[in-house]
Each structure stands twice: as structure tokens, then as C-alpha cells.
Amino acid sequence: MSQATTKLNAFPVFIRVEGEAVAIVGGGEEALAKARLIAQSSAVLHIIARDAEPELLAFIAESGANYMPGAYNASQLEGAVMVFAASGDEALDRRVAADARRLGIPVNAVDRPDLCDFFTPALVNRAPVAVAIGTEGAGPVLAQMLRSRIDRMLSPSLGPLAALAASFRNAAERLPRGSIRRRFWSDFFGGAPARAVEAGEFSQAREAATDLLLSNAPVRGHIALVGAGPGAEDLLTLRAHRLLMEADVIVHDALVPEAVVAMGRRDAERLPVGKRKGCHTKSQAEINALLVDLGRQGKRVVRLKSGDPLVFGRAGEEMAALRDAGIAYEVVPGVTAAFAAAADFELPLTLRGVSSSMVFTTGHDLKGNSLPDWAKLAISGATVAVYMGRSVAAEVAGRLIEAGLSPDTAVAVVENASLANRRRFHGTLADLPSLEARADLSGPVMTIIGDAVAGANFERSEPLAAHRHESAPVAAAEGVQP
Image 1 (cartoon, rainbow, N blue to C red):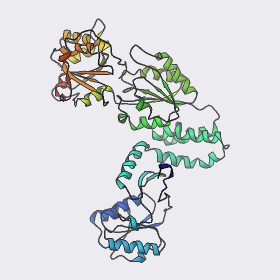
Image 2: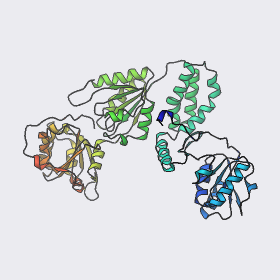
Image 3: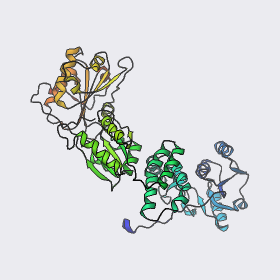
Image 4: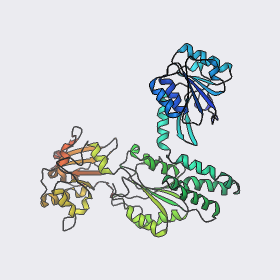
């Protein structure tokens, strides 16, 4: 049967249980699991068991469930809207199922699908919002895996936001049907009220929702400066993913992989803005102006930056432009390339008794006539993470050695940190100039220098020294941003 014609054998519904009795027959682990599930609702829980295990008794005491000790009797099911047979005894479970059906009550028998009138879902609870995942009893572990993924996707503030929406429902019904009402709810769930609830500012959220009802002014846009991480899409933060799914427009740098951009809303407009070394499709001033213009149009924008937006990502200039224009914005951190490179090498960036500080820099900081202050930190033992193209590797090594850093200081180099096609190299500061001759390295390169690097795992890395005497430096397509 094709996917298009496959039909469900169990149809999902939500049953009203507020103030209603739900009966669970059983005193062990299976009964406890069902009790915990039902306790997420406002049902009145009845637990029927001859001998309840200590953990179940503790749950009963804590939750206030009604405990009915002693032998099971069919009369104990009367008035319930649902019954769970969870005794672990097949004969008793069959008897409970038969009694429940005779009384006209739907029943679920744990791990006995042939006795079930309904199946319990894996539940994502954002009350009053609930997401139920079912497999018709065929794959409980699969249902739990899906529940875990969906749970990570949904903001913890979704429940309070939905409750606030319910309080505005009657007022919103007075708005004209069609685009005006749709716009209100779109701005409610994706605009200032939602952001205020997420920040825990509930009175501000109510004020923002009221303003939406009363105001005919143009919708105010919102810009999120989001760190895309070093490249691997599963290193994107949950908040970043949620914002991508809500965005009207995604403005992204060239170094952000397509797999990360594709995690955004399918119908979002995607605007590439370059930002590779020596090849900028837009100047920073043009990017600033673009973000301001999109914000003034009322767009929800994700400005997707490789790594972390606050580490060599020029976020400061963009934030200043947005502040000057009165456009709302937020910053969402990302995993910066230095951390990804260190993880690829299993490299401790700080190491007790060896290095207790760290420097983030670019090789271009060493191109002036005087050494920057961080060079002194490197000499005193700090770990230095250098975001750079290979074209300055020799100059970095030469200036640091000239300043007093030992040529034998350990060095780790990673191309395409965090990605499946990453390459790792190890050596010393004296070996670092060999990078300039590596025509086979075209991805972003991260270099980490310091005594702590000696604690890395070099088993899957190549030695830099093998290329020390190669010549003809070739510039890599490394971006300025991490």
C-alpha cells in the first residue's frame, strides 16, 4: 500500500477528563507509569491494587490519587471515563478489560494490544497545548524518540502563551474576519507578546497583545542575530531552530552551510549576503541597511551568522544600526569555531596547572608594527584560538616566536570543524607556516596554539611537519567570521 493511501487503524482524539475518574488496576511499575501520565491531566485518579509497591504508594501520597487497596472488583470501575489494566497478570488484565467493556468504558491493557480499545500516546505537555504521538502500539520506543525531538523543538513558554491567547479569544473575535484577524494572531504568536512571555514578562505580554488589538499602526519587525554554529546542523541551538521556523526572511552568510539554512521555514525568503574573505557580495553597510529595511517592513528576520554572532561576526555594527533605527532585535549565541575545533581534537582549552585563560583573535591582529596585548598572554601560557586564512599563518608564527613564545609550543589545526569532512593537523609553532603551502585546504581553518594543546588526542590527525618545506602559498577561502 502506498504512503498516500495508508490509513490509521486508531484515530487520535482528545477526551475531556477534567473532574472525571480514571481507573488504573495494578500496583507495580506499569501502573506507576500510567499514573504519572494521567497525573498530567485534571482527571481524578483511582488506583486499584491488592499490594501497591512502595514507589507507587509514594506517588499516591504526593499526588493525592484515590487508593483502593484489596482485591479487584468490577464495581470499582463504575463511573470512570477510562480504565487501564496494568496488573502485569494476564488473567486479571483480561478480566478488567472484559468488565470495562461490559460497563461501556474504553480500556487500555498495558503491553496487550489485543485487549486495547485505545492506545496511550507519548505526550508532549505544554498545557493547554498537547502533542500526542502514537504508533498504534507497534513502536513505543519510536514514539518516545519522536516525543523527545518534538519536546526540544517547542518553547517551554508555549503553554503560558496559549493560555494568554485563550484570554484574548473573545476580544479577537470582534476583529473583522479574514486578513485582519489572521494578522492579529500571527503577530500574537510570532511577535512582541510571544517574546515577552518567553522572557517571563507576562504583564508586558498582555500589554503588547492589547496594543495589537487597538493599534492600526504597521507591524513592527524583529531581527534575530543568530549563531549558526561551526557548520554541523545538529549543533544549532534549540532557540535558533525555533526562530528559523518562524522567520519570514533568512539573511545568511556564505559560510553557513545550506543544510543549516534549510532548517528554516520552507516558505521563508532567503537572502545570501556573502562574507567570504576577499569576496563580499554586500558591504557591511549594505547589510545593515537591508536589516533595517526588513525590520521597517514588519518582517521577522533571522540574520544567520557562522559560529557565534558576537565573535568576529560584526554583530556590534548591526546592533548599532538596528538600535539607531528603533528596530527590535535579539542575539542568539552559537557554538563558535574554536569550541568545535577543540572538540574535534578532544583538546582542553584550559588545563589545570598549564593554562587558565584563553584568547580569541584573528591573525590580522599581528600585521601591525606593535604586538597586540593578547600576544603577552600567549607568552604567559594562555591558549590562543586564531580565526584566520592560511595566508597569515607564517606571519603569526614568526611574530609570536620573535616575541618569545617557544617554537616548540603545541599547535592544532582543523579545517571544516564539526563537519564530517573535517581534517585535523598537529605540530608545533615552528611547523605552522607550512599551512600557507596547502593548496588542498579550501574550507575554513581554525588554529589553536598553547601548551594545553599537548593534551589533545592526535590519533586521527596529520602532522604539519610533513609539509614544512613546501612552498608557493595559496590563500584559502576562509571567511573573516568564525
